[in-house]
Image 1: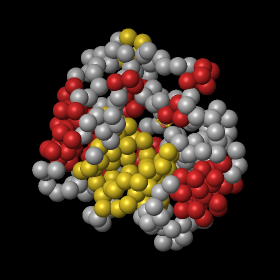
Image 2: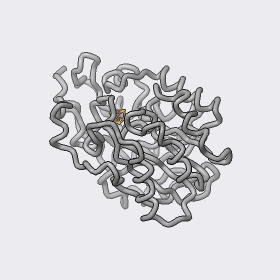
Image 3: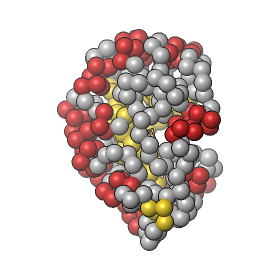
Image 4: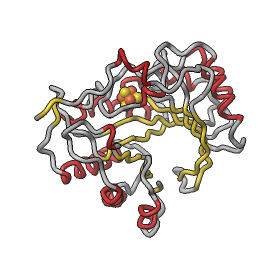
Length: 302
Ligand code: SF4
């Protein structure tokens, strides 16, 4: 085993950040995504600019698009106004992604919840990314301001359900925490989707890269994670190939497009009760799509 090549220390991160204006969103995009009813939905994704996430997961560089200080009151509603002004007004689903966890009070101030909900009330579905340990009454303090007809969906970064690998990611959660969060969400009649790493870095709790993990084991655990989240009632999962620049030194190669394709098709066979998506990052998905589109039915998009 070799020590993990630590990324930039938190104290030095400010020098490497790309954002500073608290009143401007990072981006806003319109996409189509398969909905739970089997129909394509017009989805607006807003990337909000807010305080850096307090967790320090080894595979995450979202902190580059965050602020050092707590997000000021009023900044998020203002960002939403700007973001929505750049998009058509016929969106059906909105994703509020904030490079962290929506229910981290220093990232999204709870006093802004009524203003935020007023701006997104016209959407039929609201998707919020969150850490499993923050799935509790904090969510209800937000959703109580939404119309009763709005469907709420929590997007949880499950990453992997291999207990030791998950521990090594430094995300301060266990599969039991994820299961509890999903059960809690279901009790509120919320949907839950999972982000799963393809393939998760394998790091021990002593912060050392486990080098004796084969490609087959990594693929196998991605598939086991797909099966696990489906069994726990998740209604969608997104496979996220680990980018080469985020792979800890010594822990093998990032998945190739062919590997993404192979695993995604295998995962699709398992995911027969939930939607499966693949986030292709900077990969050219045209070759992948050729294969996927020849597979029945349309449950996997890229
Ligand atoms: S909790 Fe999410 S946003 Fe925060 S460091 Fe981990 S992966 Fe990144």
